Image (cartoon, rainbow, N blue to C red; front, top):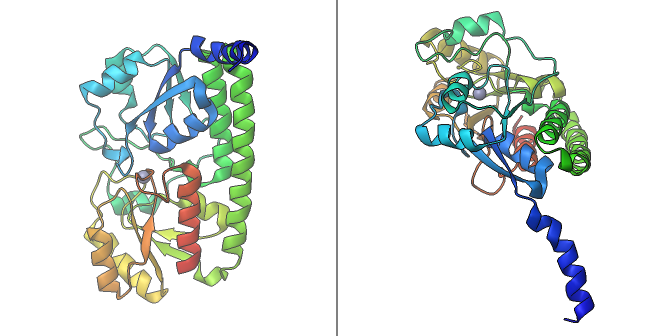
Length: 302
Ligand SMILES: [Zn+2]
């Protein structure tokens, strides 16, 4: 290497060395992935709830409190999804920037009958999920807003990176738009009468709204309560009557309930959907992968 090359490369490298990565905590794996896409090399992102884990029933440990106490930015979904964040914020005495990624989207209300059939509400653990459905990331159009909120939050904590975050956010949003139009095309090939799906818990209403698919589930929008025998019996009748063929387990939920339901309704469990967590396995290690995998599985089985 000649002298000129050495000077040029050290000039190029020096800003990288000077940047200490911005420490960011994300509440669960999907938020962590989207934050990494926006934050790139300027951020170090840690996820509290890991791949294939259920954020609804998560209980922060002292190590999680320590992680948050050291962070400058905390990225959460909001809409009541993380029922445990208030206590965690208090324990960690967190004074950094909190990004509520779903801020500004129009949330779907939780259906009244659904509240009845999963019989949860204000249980003793304090998991109150409110009256809106928190799973808004299953509509890529909402994730565009997530990306803007995350870019704004990172820029607030790291003003020098604002242009960088803006650029990365724009590039990622272009990929989300592509994903959305690709998904629309996949589902357009499925006749309307066949767009019916059974899953464990009610996590896909936003996907259903975006692409005109009806999802049913024995559990409500949270997994923290058992499905009632009455709702299970009702679903079995419905699955039979409507000849629902698309029956899925979820990557972060216990599959026994769906297995039982499918058996009694006389249908086969056809595959796996990724609802509230990415996977450590190939196919759903990022949001983009996860969404593609879900769309492919759904459109093939419906
Ligand atoms: Zn969920």
